[in-house]
Image (tube, rainbow, N blue to C red; front, side, top):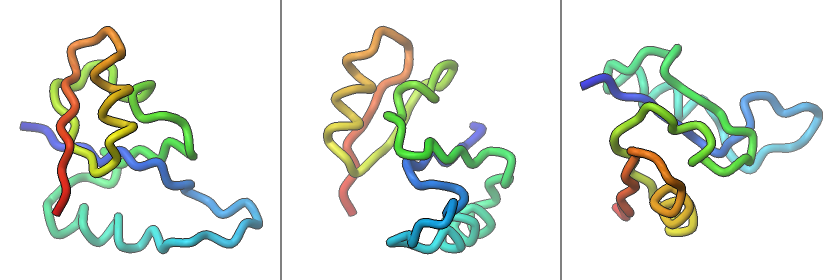
Length: 82
């Protein structure tokens, strides 16, 4: 299966102070063998708008999962809490 990372994070700070460090996203992708080309930063936009053509999406945000499953499309969202 081809794996992608879709995150609500902002790719660039645009002068804002970010509450997180995107290096952890890139590090996780590298450890899992996910191409950097397969990382999407939604810049705060709801993820369902970026998941066309995907089958499954795992997320820890129940609102994102609700929106994904409510949107007519083939992607199914699963709530994942570690």
